[in-house]
Length: 577
Image (cartoon, rainbow, N blue to C red; front, side, top):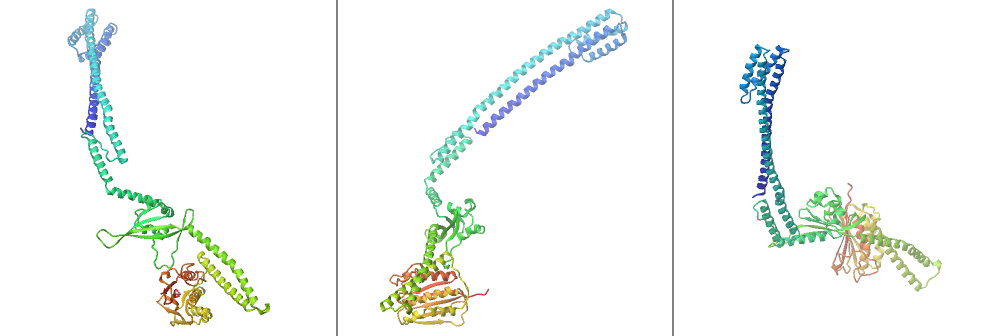
């Protein structure tokens, strides 16, 4: 039987018994009330009329008229209230005797007969009162018995429901709860067995089906994939580098705790949202999802306030592609953004830069003193020097000049790294820059009998550049070209317009060239090509690169081993707008 049916039957039966109990109680209460009303109406009133007639009869001798009127009135009421057997006959006798009394009020024999008639009426009603009282008593006893029986049945039904119904409902729930706990503990072989064909039987059947499905799922590859997914999520969340995952449509798939900390948002506000939509309200997310421009001259680390201080992160965007089964073409499935915390290295780099700047600045003073002392030694007023002394002075002069150049490069480098270098970018004449650079290295070129040839297009527009820094770069190019070119060779300085926005400067030499293995490294700090002259610091070209890129220009090298080298810089044409 269904639980709902049991509840309906039990509660319905109890409700029916309560209704029956109420009806029985109401019926017997009404019966007792009716019996009581009969006694009052039929018998008590008659006794009252009889008493009044006796009193009136006693008053006839003193006030006959009033007594006769009162007697007649009560007699009339009695005539209308005849309810008992034999009462009519006695009442009729009373009426006849009263008629005789009206004719002769002094007749004592008639009065005596009237009293007998009244007493007879009173006796009949008293006997009736006793009889009706016995009937009311029996009615009350029957009512008590009937109400007790119905009440007992109601109690038994309610007690049965109280004892059995909660147990019938709670026991299966308790068994089901224990089974659910077993399932939660990954005991998917657990089953519930209810033999009743009721709601619990249906629930047990559904539960067993669910447990079977879970057991199949637990044994399937899908579960293993889900477990590996959870393992991967845990691994990503425990990494110290911020990581963000996007699908091929730019929807945020995952973001670890470190990324959430630096972004300052909650996981539920990010996951499943479009990165472009989030970027519209969050500048940091915009800078993170923005892919690096491949033409950008220099990749700068991201500066983010994290961990209570300014931190530096190196952003790397890894494009994830797969080759679907049975296909040859790769498809893009998303990107992973990794932010590597390089704050410690950046702080060490700042410390190194400050140290180099301090040392270089301190070295310039003694080197200047050495050069001043050399000039005094070369002065004839201080005394003549022999050839060995002159050779020694020249060697000291070359070394001091080299030291001065190195300290100058180190100072320039430290200014570039700290961002303290001041650029005066303005409208500049490219011809003047080339002429100044050629004039600066002319003596050095003449010493090796190297010819400097300028090939410049006519009517070139002005460029947007810092004259001093651009000249320094060209001088560095020319100095290197002179150093690595053979004597009596030619170095070409070419100046031309490559498009409507750019002018290019090229320094072309006929030296031994640079191996292709080192072409990408020549602009790195402190790098020197193996087998080359090691007299320099390896900073010149690195500083050149920083100078040009700081002016939004580009620097480039074309070279092949044995075919010379071409160093070039591309500058923007000056625009008045």
